[in-house]
Amino acid sequence: MDRYTMTAVIVLSGLWQVGFFMEPAAADAAEPVTITDSADYFPDAVGNRWVYRGHITEGPLQTVDNKFFTNVSTVTGTKTINNVRVTVFHDTNPGNHGPSDSFYRRDSVGIVYYGSEPGTPLEKQLIPYQIFRFPIKIPSSFQQFDRTGLDFGSDMDHDGANEKTDVKGWVTLLGRETITVPAGTFPDAIKVEAKMTMQIHLSSGRGAIAGSDVMTAWFAKGVGLVKYAERQEMGPIKEDRGVIVEITEELEEYEIKK
Image (cartoon, rainbow, N blue to C red; front, top):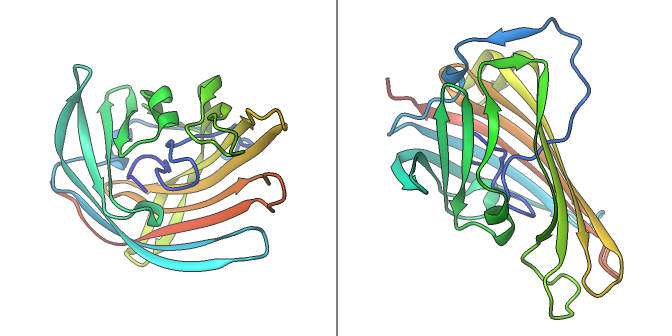
């Protein structure tokens, strides 16, 4: 899991590896809060390092495989993408998917995601896109994109042609709460809830497959991402039973450069 998305998001773990997608969640009943020091929740100085303990379960519905893994995330430097200077995060094993680099630009108005290496064909059609807006307002949400007819980058029905897909994404900030992980207890962590929806249209004309990615993540001031929990579902193709994946990463230790 890269440090901003759950990718992000995102994550870049998961079935689709396309970052931090969200669909509007129910608004929190808490009093509205504006966080003026929003950037403090996403430290990105070169040399910052986070170690996460991960757990993943996956399988076609009732057939479940349990795995444990470690992911180390480090800010390694900067690079230029399309004349934009971005920060590079290197993850050793996000979501148990092996090493990757992710690219972000953080400024006074928020954080924009510029993709990853190795990326996916689908991700390359979506980037760049915003993943946080500053100042952070709780509760709040915004739509990242609503795209149709994208190349999914995979031939799922084995007819010799890649499928097309429709993708929607939003970001929703739910509240602040205390979160406890192996690295300690963090008060007033920002809680983010996410849901990605995808409709994959089979080129063979055999209908469409629905996919979703639901995630909750917590970001602590001065630390960054301390935990995320994610559930991914892919509908069945022909005779199979579909796929369900659940992933959790919790912070074990960290080093933040001043």
